[in-house]
Length: 121
Image (cartoon, rainbow, N blue to C red; front, side, top):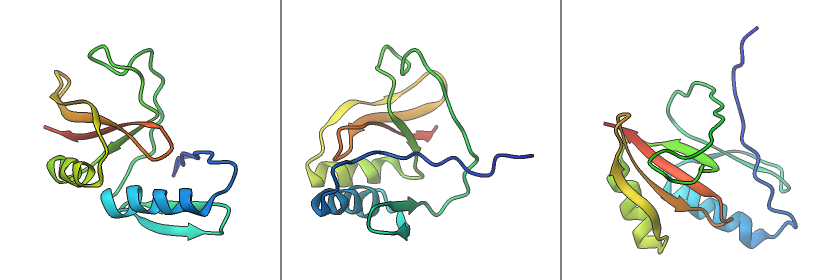
């Protein structure tokens, strides 16, 4: 038996088309993910890279930060930061080079979820 995928489900009840549009703009336009499934009541975004399923349990987010809701690794952190700035999303932490070998920053998505956007150094 092998775990082949882990999917994060973020509740946005009650349903609101504007919130789905905000998700499309943030996860699609800014982070470059594509829609893999859209049933109206659920929209699933996927990335282009190969990913290994992971789940983490944490008491803190490292370097004295709060535990983020999601960690998203990207191949061009500077480009994502530029896109977020252009779209008006404030960075809440970083960018910082962490002693465990990542460069990262924290930002909140349109639903208020704290995201750890990172690249390995």
